[in-house]
Image (tube, rainbow, N blue to C red; front, side):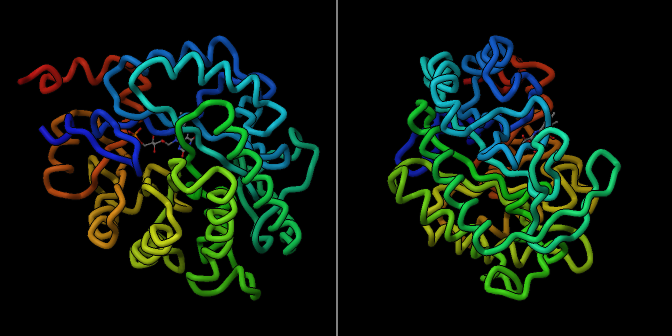
Length: 330
Ligand SMILES: Cc1cc2nc3c(=O)[nH]c(=O)nc-3n(C[C@H](O)[C@H](O)[C@H](O)COP(=O)(O)O)c2cc1C
């Protein structure tokens, strides 16, 4: 069974191909790790999965999306260490996802600006907000904050990081033509819309070291007229690979992770993932609607992806994997 075979992310060996994808638990308090949060993730260290990716965590206070979002800024390093120390005793690597919510930031919470590539209005909790346009100085400051957060996560003892560029958050807002209408070098064609990612990846790798595992969650396609396309996702993945990213985690762009644009009952983004997988040599992860190990096996065997994210099924039942009939089969 392929799902049970190991997979490398750069030099890091995962014992199998099933991943707990990042899922906001709502269990952080004022950005801090709580005992409840630790216990939540502890359940997954012996759940059978090969990799745990901790929920999206803010890289600066201005990028906070919600009250119970985790803080990945340097001022929270020692606190984050409590989480990594509680989890890293097992044979399951633990990554953390880094995020800035951009136009989806909650200003009542941050007291700061709501930033975006070009000021396109965004809906948050049903209400419209009109974000400010980021200056080039803002972009450089943002990159610096990502660097500091990435270093903080590494120093706090986590095994790798994932940059969140999906589901309509700030990096995705730069990638999508629906939300990036800039006329400078950070907008326009795909190379320009991905420039912020490339600059960030270079800066982060320089800080954390080239071997430190780095993934990108790419909301590769908007499945919407005028939005990003699967062709964009293929090209973007090639650029990210060239820049030294060690794995691509595919999800939706402005459509979010549920993908109303396709009707696949499982593996929502499979139409994109096989094309990306054919174009790159690094592992490709596919998440969305996968509820049985048999489905995961089909997608792996038919080469849609190298890794499978199982979100809600594991959220509902941390023993999901162990209870799958194939798990204990010879
Ligand atoms: C409660 C919840 C919280 C989520 N939080 C995040 C998150 O922090 N970062 C992220 O990239 N995706 C997030 N997602 C999306 C999941 O990672 C995953 O892509 C989605 O649940 C689809 O997979 P599934 O059908 O296996 O659940 C979240 C999903 C859920 C249900």
